[in-house]
Length: 214
Image 1 (cartoon, helix red, strand yellow):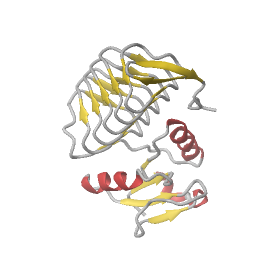
Image 2: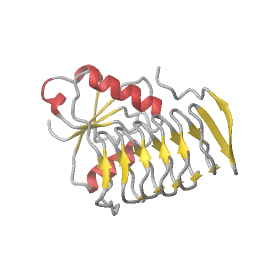
Image 3: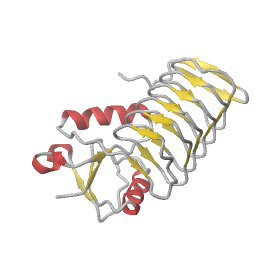
């Protein structure tokens, strides 16, 4: 078998990833169904249990198409423990990706995104449809950026944090580790580690939001 594996297929996001692979001229070999419940792969794509991963399958590149940082982190750990060792990074080919962009292993950037130059994405970052990432962004490992979110220039997002749909983060702001910026929030000041920021202007509402890795 040749192609790309998707590890974790319980999210509707898998259909967008499959389209991005198609546009990139890459074939989706199979999806790995690592959790009980329905999956969202098209019917013509093979679905395998984690126990099926052996031999040549372990040499295939893989993506983890799960939006929530904690879920993506856990699935990536499972994939590595099972012997997968080649996380693929994929920027949808429809995007005008800047030359000066550092992208770590396992990242996925969905269609319609605007990417500024001079940015650094650490491992397993996920940027969803239509987000705008300004120049000199720093996105830590397992960060998730929701559809239509806007990060102005010089924004830093700490490891494991999630910026939800339609949120706006003003220039030079730092969002700490394992934090959540709520949908539609407008962030005008730094967000502490582990907090949930919501509103306009956004205020930290509570701590221990459940994103922290176990």
